[in-house]
Every structure is written in C-alpha cells, then in structure tokens.
Length: 231
Image (cartoon, rainbow, N blue to C red; front, side, top):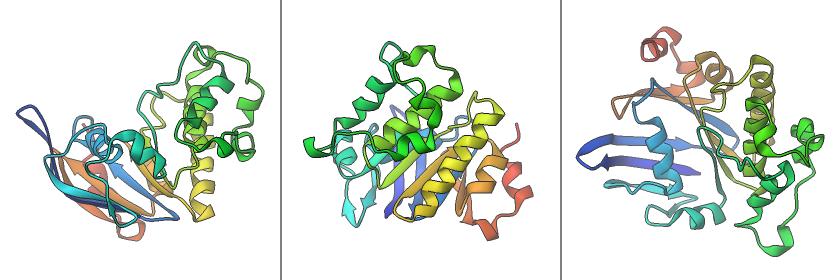
C-alpha cells in the first residue's frame, strides 16, 4: 500500500535521509528501528507530508503523493501518532477524539464503537481533560484519535516512549489486533527492540539517514539488529 523509493531529505545543508526505500503492506506491521537522530522521524514526516523531500517518490495505493499537503494525505487514509503524543491538554478526552473528525465527511463524524473496546479506560475518562491523564493514557488517546479518522495506514512514532510496562502491553495488544484485521498497514518507529521484534512482520534498521538492514521477521538476526540500537 505504501511504497517509499530513494528518498533524500535535507534540513538546510544537513542531509537527514539518504536514498531511503521502504514499503508497508496491508495486514502487516513494518518496524523502523535505530538510535536517536538517525532519521526515523524524518522518514515519517516525509510520508505524512510535514517535510518536503529533495529526491525520490512516495506512492500510496499506487498514487504519487509526494507533493500533497498533510491534510490531503490524511483524507486519503493516512493517520499519524506523533512522538510526544501532541494531544490537546485543555480539551477533554471526548473533545480530543472529535478533533479526528476534521478529514471526515459529515456523515462519518462519529466515534467508532471499537475505540472504547480497544481502550476501555478512555470511556471512563471522557469528561477528563487530556492534560490530566497519565503519559500512558495520553498515548492511548493519541492512538484512538488517529483511529477516529478510519485510517488505512497508521503511523506510530515511538509509542512506548515514557510509558509504563503495563500500558506498553496494552498498546502492543491493540496494534496486533489492528494488524490482524487485515485492512490496515501499520508503520511503526521504535527503539525498544523487544516491542518491535514481537510485532514486526517486516523491519528496517536505520543508521545515519540510511537503511542498513531490512527484511522479514523470519530473516531478522537479533544480534545484527541490536548492534545498531546500542549506544
């Protein structure tokens, strides 16, 4: 569904991505791994349209989207959960969820029932302000807000960062359920190896803006991947 081919991306004179190619398929989790500062988030920003690429192409469902603005990509079914969650702290949980209505036609502006099946804690906190939630609960809210848009591609940037282990397991379960439905592609950026390993159907390891290892879960050699994650 998503094909990224030979991307170069710059911040001024600094090159963040070098000839990066990647694909993410429906019904699969594609994990991008690497240390801080190797270009993982830059890759995601390029896919969602928050950063202009210098070279290469991004295809979504066989359509070139490299020049589309972020809101147009969202309307095509691409949803992102950014690093740091970026929920609205002064809005309630329900109001945060409703911000996901923006790309939807009026007839579809409702909260799917599965949201509260996946994240029952949010149903108990609908009137609570987002800023009053724990870090783990805010992460669940950020994922739920993305799911309100009915995405066909869900992009997650380090969803385990700063999250307590019990909620990491909940998020892992939700990602697995979404993958197993078979109608969504999931692109996951992670530093936490065990989380990525247990979810990945395909993986790519980045170093200095390049992909240096890639393959399927079966092809992953754990020691080789860990070598690029240790500081």
